[in-house]
Image (cartoon, rainbow, N blue to C red; front, side):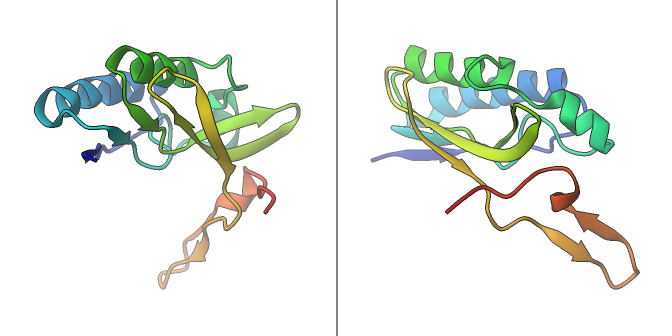
Length: 137
C-alpha cells in the first residue's frame, strides 16, 4: 500500500485553504500514486474568532470541503483521509475527520474526543473546547 500525506499551513481563509489542499493533493497523486492520501487536521480552516470558525463549519455531507474530498477520492480511485474539518450538527460543532473509499463513499467518521486546551508558559491560552464539542467514544 502506498500512502501520501499532505502538509499545509492553513489559515482563516477557507477558500484559499481548499484551493491549496486541492493543488497539493493533485501533486501528491501525480508524484506518488498513493492508495491512501491523508490531509492534516483542520486543513480547511484554522484561526479566526469563534464566530468565524462556526461560520466555516459544514453540515455533512452537504459542505464544500466534504464534497471536494468525496469527489477527489472517486475521481482518483483512492482512499482519502480528510484530516479534520469543523462540522456543524444542528446547533453543535465538532472537529471531525472523515475517510472516503475509492468510490467516494464515506466509510468512517470520527469526532475528536480529546480536545486541545493549553496555557503556554507566557500565559496565552488556546481552548479548542471553547468552540467545538467532544465526540463520543
